[in-house]
Structure formats: structure tokens, C-alpha cells
View 1 (cartoon, rainbow, N blue to C red):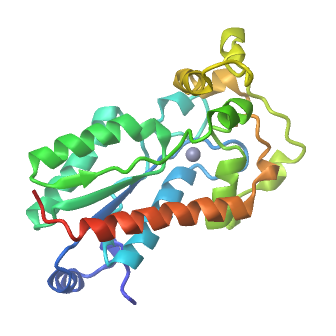
View 2 (view 1 turned 180 degrees about the vertical axis):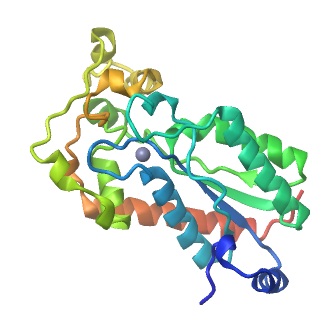
Length: 265
Ligand SMILES: [Zn+2]
């Protein structure tokens, strides 16, 4: 397929031809953030990754991508320069307005690909409400985080650490400045009670991991580098990143393929 999958890169007739040739058009909206990502990753890391995922899934399923916005909900990163945050209502309104416009043109299947944890609840709510309001099905598949709670408690690695650096190395290596994290020493520090949650020998690691992740103060209060976690970005594992990426893309492709067999309710 030679045409661009990005709506904003198509001409109107090209888009009309696409709609005529595809009986099951699905719009994919990538969502992420513009927020500090430590000293070495670009501010748009989450949006760049979500857009790359949306593009690949669209190419493999004859879908198209609507790039509705770059920033997301990131008030907890405002202590660092460069972060842009929307109010939750703004983000929800952007999603709803986009779903409404698509519905106006007869497109009633919308997939939201969210690359930023801080958006999660807002996007999920907007998906449900906008779908109901505009006769559409708006899906936000879960991002299968928190798979191994003991590992999570050990490394935290929630933001700009080894795993996000791996994804960035895979998708946009030219934007990373690894020299800024040479000789990395973790700067993340929690109050004693929160630090106690990280005891990997204690019972109920899953509950304690959830509590730890719910402890969402402002990032600059936890970590002077902006890296939220204990995993060295220099240990980013490109193979693991590629494997995780391919698994995620594969699941989304499977989801859309299945979805195309199901009529609208
Ligand atoms: Zn991120």
C-alpha cells in the first residue's frame, strides 16, 4: 500500500476512495504526552511511540490514523521544563469531538492507542461516553502493564528508565541523547512508608505494586533527574523492546481483524 495512513496526509478524493474500497473503515487515534522524560529521552516519547504503533497497525489492517493531539494529561511532570499538560476535560473533549466528526462521516469504529499511563482513566471514560453519544464503538485496549509485580517493586522503572529507553532506541534512536545518562545513579527517593512497599519478600506484591504506582505525587518531588525508577537506562534491552513491541502490534492487528467481522451494535 503506497498511500499514507495518516488522514492529514491524504487528499480528500484519496480518502473518499479509501472509504469506498474499505467496507470496514477503522480510525486509529494515537494518544500520549509532551512531558519530561529524564535527561535523555525526547519530550514527545509517549506520543511518538503511540503514533508509531498506530501507523504500523493501520498499515497492516487497511485502517487510517487521526492524529488528534500531541499533549495529554501530565500535571505531575510540570515541575520540569517542557511539559505541556491539558486539563482532563480538554483531553476528553478532543477525543469526543474527533469521535463525533468521524461519526458524521460514517465511521463508527474507533481504536484509541494510548501511550501515556497518566491519560488512562480519562481516555477510558471518554471512549465510553463518546461512543455512546455518537453511536460508535470506541475501544481502548488495556496496555498489559503490571505483568510482574515483584519485578515492578524491584525496579519500579515507571518513567524514562530502561524499558522506555528500549522502546525509544527501537523507534526513534536519532532523538535520544544517551551521553546525558552516562554513569547513571538512580535519583528516585520515596518517603520511608512508600519505600517499605518495595520489600519484595513481603506478601501480596500485586497489592503493594498497585499502591506504589497509585502514589502519584509530582515527579520532581521523587526524583531530581526525572527518571522515576531504579533501572539504568543504559541497560535498555533492544531485543526485549522489539519483542514487546511486536507482541503489542500483533495483538492490536488481531483485535482489528476480529473487530472487522463484527457488525456495529
Ligand atoms: Zn513515557
